[in-house]
Image (tube, rainbow over all chains, first blue to last red; front, side, top):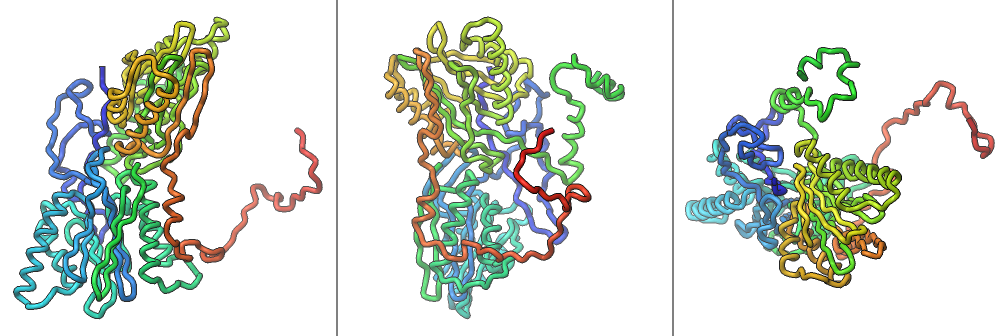
Amino acid sequence: MTTHMKAQQSVPVPSIWSTEGAARLGSGATVTTSHDDGSIDHGVTQAPYERRFSPYDFNGGTCLAIAGKDFAVVAGDTRLSTGYEILSRNVPKLCKLTSKTVLASAGCLTDVRTLQQVLDMRLRMYEHDNGKEISTPAVAQLLGNTLYYRRFFPYYAFNVLAGVDDEGKGCVFSYDAVGSHERVEYSASGSGQAFVIPVMDNIVGFKNRQDPKPEYTAADIVAICKDAFLTAGERDIYTGDAVTISVITAAGVTTETFELKRD
Amino acid sequence: MHGESGKQSLRGALKEDVPGFNFDNYARNASLPTETTMHLPSAMKTGTTIAGVTFKDGVVLGADTRATGGTEVADKNCEKIHYLAPNIYCCGAGTAADTEKTTEMISSQLDLLRLSTGSPSRVVTACTMLKRMLFRYQGHVSAALVLGGVDSSGAHLYQIYPHGSTDKNPYVTMGSGSLAAMSVFETGFKEDMTEAEAIELVKEAILAGIYNDLGSGSNVDLTIIRRNGEVTVLRGYLTPNDVEPLRTSYKRPAALSVPAGATAVLSTHMDPARPGLEGLVIEDATAMTF
């Protein structure tokens, strides 16, 4: 008797941006003949094969950040999952790096935590070397470099960096897994990225719209984030439970938590 | 043998007595993702928590309502409790198309059998028909079922696996949320429960799946089949995951409501279905007859 198999999600290899189009890292590494749902065949229906250990696990979640005129808003849900299971409903993805910069990362939690620790060390060294707090665009560059150090065994972290720059303007940077980064008006990463970015393209980027774009306040952007996460939570199984939203201004960082659906 | 039949005339390949699935395209499909940039579409699975429990006067079947395609929710309110006969219902987990079509097929076969025998269907008959079909397809029809009903010999509950094996038990769960639901059953099940107790137990089991399994979610559906022949279908018995209250809890910016005319219409082109049709005018409302 075959017991009904709990499907193990096969972990996608981190994608890397490329100017030529979709490039994939090391896709030829594994040679498995597993079922589509990732379950192990015990030599019953197929010949015996070697199963490769994957160092990556996808712990789910969605992060997004939007830059305003003199503020930036960054949000991440708090659900930690693996496969079809929830590990925790309360693991925030946001990490305050400086008084003006917040990093949000989805992906593999252990890689995210280690990346935050490595960044923290390098930020403190910067302060010792330069005698001042590091600016947000400099953090962006530092993060890009830190990720590229691990070009051939990447951090499985999908990052979004947000803060205010030295002129007081809001800035958001989005990253791929190996450090390619770009300053943008808004960005999203993680499992719910595909559900959230089209909404932001229309509402924040105002793409394909002829009506006049309003000037958004921080409260407006926070409401847009809540809406976006409710949407992502409806259609992405890995997004839900709660979302922590941080507003960064020249005065500092304020954080609020908004409850999402728990199913 | 299959390779040869591909070279035969089309008529030969469509012979009625070729049993089972046609695997001619298997090699081609396997090479598509590796040799081209095409991705095969993923079948919609129901993720799922389904459960059933027998009580003093019958059986209660329960199911969640989420259907997933990979990690995306494809349907937030799909129906997983399928009708087989007036006294027999079946919950289905696995590939959505497989559970739907399998239960439809067996429902038709039971209907025909009732016509030819003149007697109500028995649950064991449905079970045997299902397991014979699933075993014939060697597990390729990915349907994991919880079959429950009441017949002349009492109330019965079966669980049927995709490869064709069956178990008969007083309480059963299937699907990715089956462990969460079974933990509730193991804690709370007792023999000869009342209907209210049974409903409460199944409801809690499905809720455990909805909140703790990512493949299950949204609402709880119940179906109660009683020994006296009465059936109550409670579609949407509990809907604890409505998103509207959350959306109204904060002030949505006006820009989230896109006004009419916001998107530019660059050009309009009307193509009539047939030349001359654009001149068709309906003078009155008299129905056309053929």
